[in-house]
Length: 316
Image 1 (cartoon, rainbow, N blue to C red):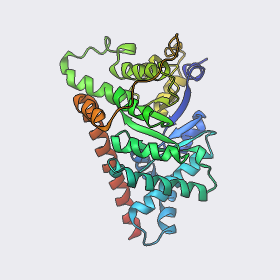
Image 2: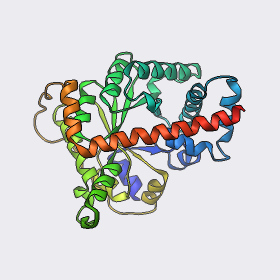
Image 3: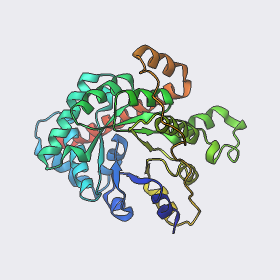
Image 4: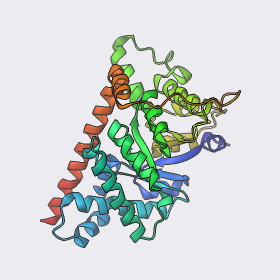
């Protein structure tokens, strides 16, 4: 078996793309999108008709409204190609507004329902801020399942578990990026590879915490920079992987043994739920996590604004 086939024995493979052709090529179980991926896709001739159709179907609508319809249109198309779920991200400008996040998620689910898609096949993506996590708590109580993204540390993962979210997406590659940049010339790539990679270590810590305490929230490792990170996390519940790395794994036969498995021993109760003050204090003390969370939100906002600019240009 090639490395991708071996990985599928241990982990559910998810495609990290808005490219329908790539989904058909790799046959993932689920698919994830974000503002950056959708922006990239609609600038290609292959996907421009989706943008034009969304604009034409909603004359005079605000660009943000058209963008919501466009995101759902991508999701509906994706669900024709994957048997499982699609993750659709709400407006990242709402990352610190629980009420607006809940209202936006409800609109997206209603749009999916109008297209004949049951809510069980959709995960609403929210940033792992305190407000995003509390929005997820409310949505899960309404049977609207969530994917908490831009997650960089155990503190965020614990708060997500407290809220009963369906799935979290810890960002392996962005953690790796921060530590490598911070180390500068002293970074030793070989010494920090595989299980020593700081992004791999972070996901391993979260995974073990969840399994040790019987937490049902799914762990989907995300944002990979190389196939070594993927191999080092084989056994994680899910992984969302870019088409380029999926292709690399499909073309190699590097052994992929299971690296992550629930720890032996009795499941123990989780620690007491985090308060907002405890969450924010711990996050502020984690320079990497707080910096990457703010940076990730800013990047997604910029790409959302760029997408709305394209919409307005076509609205005339």
